[in-house]
Image (cartoon, rainbow, N blue to C red):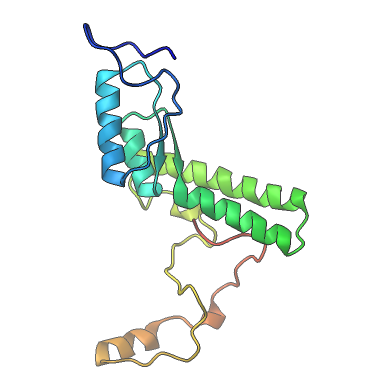
Length: 170
């Protein structure tokens, strides 16, 4: 297999193929990208990022392309779930395409701004942490401050219902 151009007198350990899989931590991936970019500036670098913040970090360090594990697994799982629920393939593809377009636009805004840039592109226009399962009973405030926060919080009935055709934020 041909090798990438190496600095004078050194053989490149990286094949020209940009598909060299590395399964390492976020920190190690970032360091590998930095080293590869410095030592082999003409070699395309494709990296697997863990999440949005890691993707932004890798893009800023010069990767040519990246794929977010959490986003891609969420998209695949959501699409499969919708198909199993009887949603036609064309409709699933349309929803997935819309989510991918908004996500790509938001990522570009975040690269130019900060992590909260483009939040209006998220479904509902805000990121709200939510439990993974529906609570079985109403929560109880453990102190006065929590009781005040509960009283001030908008009730769930005042929020607009989520669009059932669109999977939650990624």
